[in-house]
Image (cartoon, rainbow, N blue to C red; front, side, top):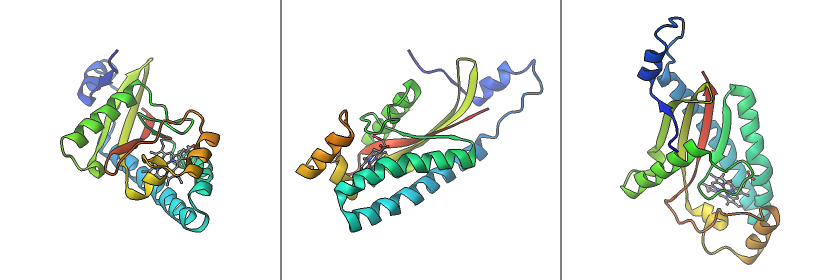
Length: 190
Ligand code: HEC
């Protein structure tokens, strides 16, 4: 089944009899979402890099497991948005994409395949499902060199073992540089 995506204009049409429904300012919502993605990366990346340097990659797996969900939780509390990271090949507990996210992630992969720089790839829409209307935003997370230690094809034995211990159902390996590892996925009820 296709995800139900309703554009701004359609929402406005449907809302005609209810004149009090304000049209959401999607530019502002995009800006907010981009700023949240920036903050997420701004906290996670230095933590990852520092831990990789001082404690090595095996210990850093635990750091990712604890820190990444914590950063998401703190940002959600601070901003009122729902904050998550998802992937077509998930590792983390909450990284399994829903139908809408799956469609967007596939679209991101197609964009990379046709030459769009992964850092520029994002998508947002007003989505109505189960009588709930929300604003949804996703931003691609590209795979860089440092990521291959834990998401690449040639993992060391200790990394393989640590991943197996923490994530018995892990599917987030086999990536190469430049591929999309996953995406930030944020939403806000309208
Ligand atoms: C030290 C190992 C390690 C390195 C290096 C690493 N990751 Fe991860 N990554 C993890 C772990 C562990 C998780 C699961 C976190 C959790 O439990 O929420 C994860 C989860 C993710 C997720 C969330 C989606 C999912 O499948 O759970 C994304 C996106 C991601 N990593 C991208 C990256 C990117 C991009 C880089 C490089 C900048 C990177 N990772 C480097 C270990 C690593």
